[in-house]
Image (cartoon, rainbow over all chains, first blue to last red; front, side, top):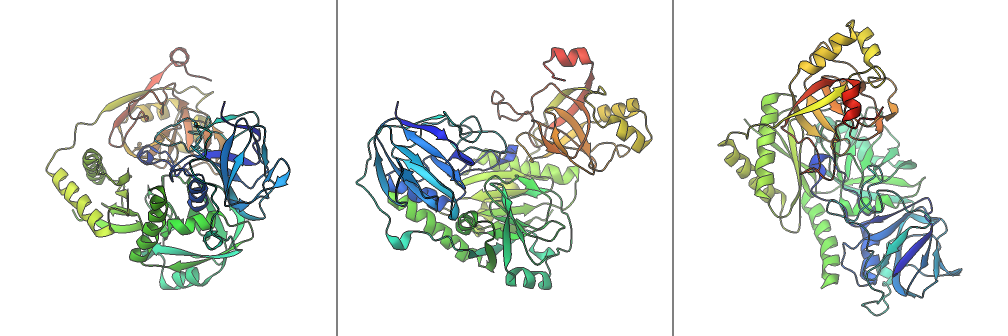
Length: 309
Length: 227
């Protein structure tokens, strides 16, 4: 058999691709990699196409044993990965031999790390995606996080590319304070000038109240003019403000519809950054135009698509 | 009727058909949803209907906002000329026993009705699927008789059993899987709401009509129901 055996699933490791599309109308969440940038680089480094399933490790503590020769890359949060006890670098390819053990400590920077393997994991495909939706118990490996003894088969064992290492300037940083760009929309009219003034000029703290569904931020309260609205569809990055007045940014495993007022949405590329924010980190919101937001999104996906050519 | 287009995100647009729960508004949403689904526009990767709105998530590599709005508006305009296809009527069997109708007694007290009257009021309605969300296959059905209209539980349950038939405000729904929830539970169905073997995965789709049918404990068990 080619692939990994899970020695320790850690706190929460799961199989993810870029997410599930086309099933939200029957209530399935999007799911997928919380940070598509680190996920994308990991696949790029081993020569995979962008949307190839990888292992997402949340917070750390996981270990895996190679059952065959394989070629991997680890990107994202720094969980001090080791191979047979020796440190190995992130953001580059590593050939593995049969019996090698890759182990992770806990993240000192960022929250999510990705292991991509050349050829991709041969895990079940459900509802248009390889992604695990942990809340729904759908997709991935039986809809759950990885546990000891799981076998993760891979396609082939050759690395289709020479060893690759990401240029330093491309390596994302995960600082303690981030600014995320937001496109106003939805019920922005329910947030008056004073509320918007507060929202765009405050520093919010992520106290760790969040998961793959979304992050709640603490700080100065924003009061919408209405406490509830008729339930409506929710998109990735939507910032909803329930009656407690603290914004919640909805991420990959968000509910598909909901009834809280929303000021707009954090752009996808900045949701990836937000996902990596550790508890105690700070967030500032900055308004961008729709045109600028679309330019950023196009640049992101054009970059990864161009790598595939 | 005029529609309002709003930005949801850099890759999503939301169309508002109204702001209230209203069968006529819902029908407009359903028409638009059917038309857009049938069109299967490449690059429209999510089309999500709700009570009075519909959201389309699109590929920004292909479209900008104005073009997407124009495509949606044209599809809706064409669909207006057509009558909505006849709704499917789906009957959901429900066992309204006290051991599964966790809030029957509570509701009876609150509403000053007998448990039998509550069941009768719940069974007599023909409901419409207004939206699906919260969980895969969780369909929001409306509207229940106003004599049953009730608030959510003050403290939501950590685990509402799978198949629980419940109400909140003037809505009713079945919990497709065991999940946390605050709707008041009247009974339980043995019918799966979400199953990989169903065409379309979900038993119900927006626009479908639903009837509940009261069944005995024996029938419930025979149909595979679990207590």
